[in-house]
Length: 459
Image 1 (cartoon, rainbow, N blue to C red):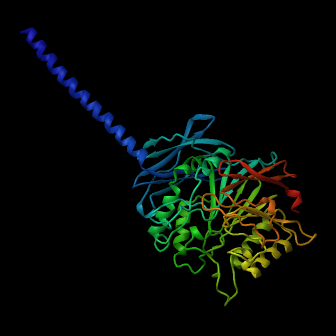
Image 2: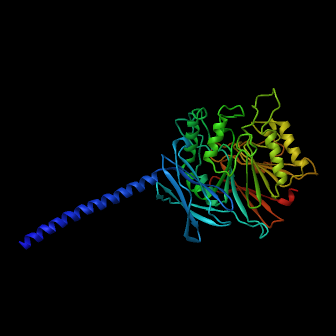
Image 3: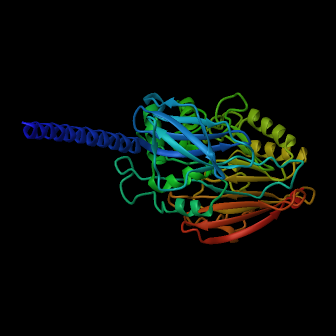
């Protein structure tokens, strides 16, 4: 009888053990499934936006409604962790989450992690950001390195023109990532709206989402800070202007997908903005929102508009930066009134340049894109004012051209590049003797040319 009871007991324990094992396995599989689902919920990003001394913006887009938060810690002190607020992404906003890391200290580097529905998402590339250094009155300004580029076309066959794909050489983003810049400044045509896109908010979100999800772009987004201005292709139809019927939507979606620290600083609409890095000042101009149509000669013509230019002149005169970078979607200094450059608006262009000279503003350098080739222009109209430089940098992945700029008397022909490329700008040296070095690289990261300009030459 005891032997029988023992057998029955063991049989019961065996059954119980078997049931517990199945439950444990079921729980494990459930956890693994939920975790795997969390990994799959990210559509694009994470992306690192603006950086200041006390906060950094973090961005991500999910595929469906989800709870999102970030956790971060100093690279040299992983024991103390910080956490952003949590947000639930929603369809109306393209399932985009923008969160602020607001417990950073100046001059630190941080690793960060992203959590979707409270589960950590793993990535096989570095996810880091940095806060800016507190250097004034203490040390010389830090060395700064940043990348510029424009015209990023990502193919989507069902919406593209028939024939050869227009986008190519997406490995260029790996080459930029390998240069490890502090930040990247996107100079317009950062995405290409197509005919199905620009007549609806849904179309805008779909186009921005498709471009941002490019696989080759993700490592660069995750560990390099990003700033942007726009041109026609991320604003509306080709060559679009202030009459565009969805320009408010264009502004809304641009702000949703980028991480600048401010927009519309004039209060007149659009995306005009400003940021600082180290001792450098950057002025992000809007060449679309206020623009007169290219073919409208029945009224005073404007590309930026007087309000925007007057703000710019005030901000430039206030700035103490050795280099004052004015970023705009199209060429400024080219002497040829071709395509959509500023020479096609001669009166306003003259007003801007005259104001810069009249106010004796030092250190101005224009940065722009649009043209699908790269060239450096140098304008020196008299011995009484320093030479103005205009660095046109294009194209990242859209089709490139070998325009010789024969119409532009200011272009330095040895700097013409007619292949996909990007620029890297380094500012180095002590506070009173800063030097800008411009380097242009091809899609594989091979240097094509370089030029150095001292801040003291721009006075």
